[in-house]
Image 1 (cartoon, rainbow, N blue to C red):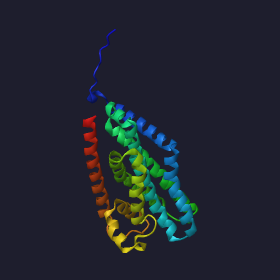
Image 2: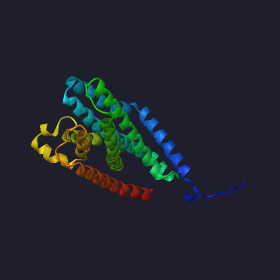
Image 3: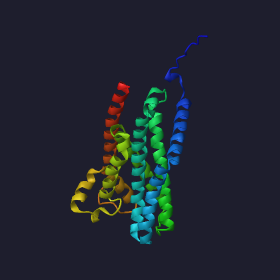
Image 4: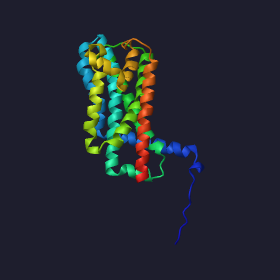
Length: 261
């Protein structure tokens, strides 16, 4: 018995259709990341562990307040680079990315779900570190400061998601963890995640403003008065430019890979 295929124009599908796809894709992606213990425990556990070691030893000190914001930055950068960079690299190696490309699912839903999932992990990290800061580190902060920190960290998930996407499209899956660590760890140290910029060697202090992690750290540290002197607008501009650069490069590579498929 012959059947007739009915073509459905994307324009005929309502907003609720795309909203449902985006919601489902985000839900499944977040659950997948959460169930991947090597990812979820490391991304959430490392900032918490380091804060318990270094932040609690400076109880009632300003350093505990400093580390609360800097480790929040470290957590979101880690979530984005490993969640997006290593995640998509693995899916590309397994052929899952090609299946997604061949499916009628909107491209924005695939990438947007990963961005939202990383942002959700960022919120969990900030909430956990703020709780530890108040209870263990002896940090006093207002609700407004906590919300500002969460807002900066959420905004910071965008440029590093873009960076993770570019890494995923360039690096083979088996090399992704090593390459990401080579990018992530030096940038974190040179940007003041572990100690104030003023404590670093002179050549690192000169190099730091060229790193996106530095600008994210300055925005977060500014909430508590630890940022370097100067206006905050250039830091937002630097992160915006970095995001556009990463997305532009990733879009070119992604479009070429689709053309070859």
